[in-house]
Length: 347
Image 1 (cartoon, rainbow, N blue to C red):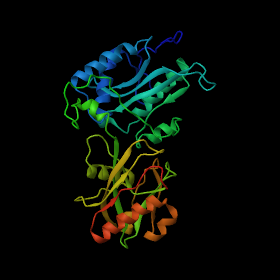
Image 2: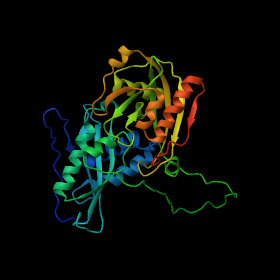
Image 3: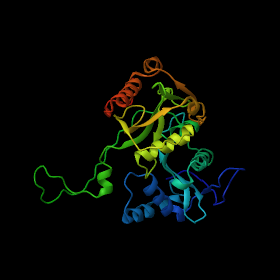
Image 4: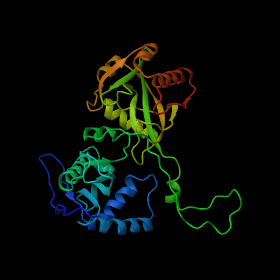
């Protein structure tokens, strides 16, 4: 790719006071970046053969004349703690991108044991700064998880229509396949053909008078009032997610055991390119003292409110209120609910 003369920054860690050290990646980091993508980004980890192939592909692209740029944070054990990989590609020029260059943020990954320390923000910021300042890229693209979307919005990214994808492999057909039978595919390739789903888990709390408790979002005007909960981390089970999110968002730790109130499913739409499926668990009744003791995370919520069920309807989109009503009915009747139309892009 011809981009005139561009200098890739040398591998000098940089850090402001209190911020993690970041450095530009070199071809020697290719395997580490590939393994981070395999373990912490892809829904199905790569085989060792695919890791080798991807490493061989990425390493030469990380040199000065290549089209890949990455920034990483090193871990004391010698592995990578976090990475952000961008791929530069040509587009037709326009006033907003006169050089005809765009960059796709292809991989952003942080090891689970060092998350919520600002590592993702540090490596993504370093990557974007380098691409815009040193390579004069002005058009940036990425696909975000629901959990990461607030960070990317803070960095300047805006929403876009839902992603549409397909995989077409020009491979010879099997010599003999019975009609109606499906040819075998490697797991990595088959995984790319099936729908992707984002999973979440929530806790449903009421006060001692069975009035629903919800939190007011500071980042989602489309869903202003929310149950306590969030997106699952890699390797978590739904109850573990609900307990972790509850602790992070309120300071409370539900004792359990898990009692499922509802399963919620939504088809993708303009707001989010994947289906979502979630579990809502019974968090029980909170005393007035427990409600007063809730410690909100100001980056996510700014108010706790307790209202009778009927008074929530005027404050929420119809689909959110329908979900809340189904959850409350499940708590009251003891019969778990199925909410199958909590689709993205529907009011």
